Structures are given as C-alpha cells and as structure tokens.
Image (cartoon, rainbow, N blue to C red; front, side, top):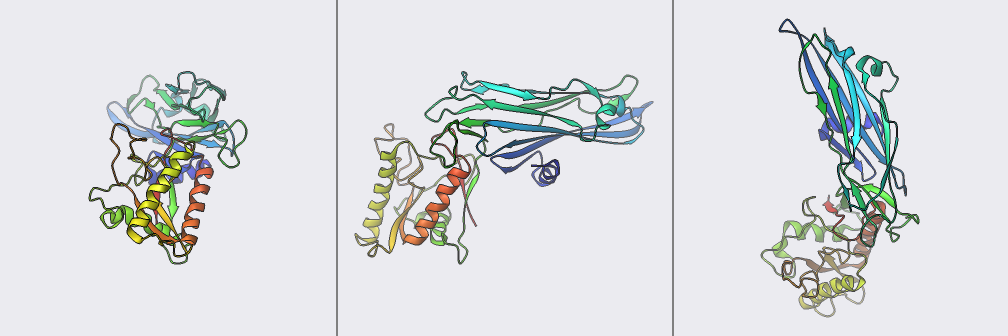
Length: 346
C-alpha cells in the first residue's frame, strides 16, 4: 500500500483503512492554532500516517510512517520539535518473542523533516517461531505508533501535543495446512475479513449464496425450525471461526446437517447425485450444525438448531466450497478463537 492509497482510503474510512489482511493503514492529525498577543495569527497541521504491509508468506511486518505538513498564516511551526516512537504495549502469549528493526529516528524539527523528499521512518517486526501458543503457534502483539510535539517558546498555541494512530494487532502463525504456507509460517493483521458470495445470475455459487442469505434474512423459514435462529458471521463482533484440526467434529457437523436434509426432503434428497446437502454455517466452522451436541458443549450453552441445511445442486455447492477453501488460504484463516471471519452476500 502506498502513501497515496492510504490517504485516499482514510478519506472514507476515517482513521483506519484496511485494504486486506496484509495491507492496512491508520492516521492521526495534530491541528494547532497559533496566536500573537491573544489574537489568532495562523494554523498548522501535522498528518501522521502509519502503513503496515506483509509480503506473501513472510513473517516480517513492515511499517512505513509518513508525515505531511501544512501551515497557513504566521506560525512558529518550523521550530516545532517532533518526536516519534513505536511501542509494543502487550504481546500474547507472554512467551512470544518479537524482534524489531528499521529506523529509530530522534527528535527533529518541523523544518528539518519538511525539507526531506519523503519525510518519515520505517519499522519492522518479526515473530519468532516456537514462541506462540496452540497447535498453530500463534502469537500477537499490540503495535502502537506515537508522535509527540513540543511547541517553541514565545508562542501562544492551542492544540494537542500527541498523536496515537490506532493499529490492529499483527499476528504470526505456523499453520502448515494453509496452501502455499512456508515451513516457518507467516503473518497477517488481526482483522475479520468477509468471505464473498454472490446471488447474481451466472454466479457459480448462486444457490449456495442464496442459502446463506436466507439463513440470515429469513431464518425462521429455514430448516431445522427454530424461531430464535440467529447465525453469527454478519459482524466482526460475532464472527465465524474456522475448524480444521478436529476432523471428527467436521464430520459431525456434516452428519447433523444431512439428518435435516433427510428429515425434511426425504432419503432421496440428492436426486441420484444431482444435489448435495448444503449447510450453513459451514462444517468447517466451530459454529456448525454439531456445536450444541453434548460432546462439544458439555455445559449446554451453545444455541440449539442454530444452523440451516437444504439440498442444492452439487455444482453450486462445489463452487461455494471452492470459494471457502480459497478464502481460508488467501487470508491465512487459522483454526480456533484466535481468528475469525464474516460472510458478505452480494
């Protein structure tokens, strides 16, 4: 992601712009009003941008921080002292080891920085394998860019002295089951991206997408019957989570969905192989049809019958499955609650 892309993205996404799980940016501004003898004489602005990118299959997260300076009227802005820094306030787990590199700039004046062709600095983070948690060796950190300014003496200035752009937590994993994953895994940003489906005429997954749409918008008209059906995956606060390591549970999800297809459409629902039992949430999620079984929910807290199953043409079902598997790999979606994703039906 370039500086230009970041600025354009922030025009519509305010302080945070996400291009993908591997390219994000944030920004913050310091607006100051300068006065002489209690009368406003000019204004200044410092835009502080932070762009994070990750190369395919890499465990290094690269950050490029940019400044943009603007001033009008009579100000003391050129003499302002600008001090940037970055910090990692917290990491998970505590054993996680994250090395840092790049430029470590000292305090400089507005005038010095503004004279540079592309004022800013770089920073990078690399998570060490074997220091994470779980079967996928997942580790996270909070990355916090920070900028403070000191106004020159003799001026009356109204404005903030600190900018702290928000940044999503980088994540490293060693999930070898992700297609194209290297031996030491890779990195991404912790953001719940949306898996795309289309109901448009000609879309190969059209009926699979329609099934998902009905499950969200007409849940009481889907099977199994449940007047309180409320399937997650529409918002980042209630994402779906991938199920990979427990094949037995994936198979259980399929069995529970097929039971519904047989009960509602008969044992011959497949019409001689023309159709397949499509389930949503997918059998590859922890929110699948078997989530309320006592084996997987001994405390009885999972919602019952909170899924939908119906026969659809095998071509549509297969196309939906291809979208799902490609999405998992492309976005480095890992098993369990440390990750999540949404569904978007267009």
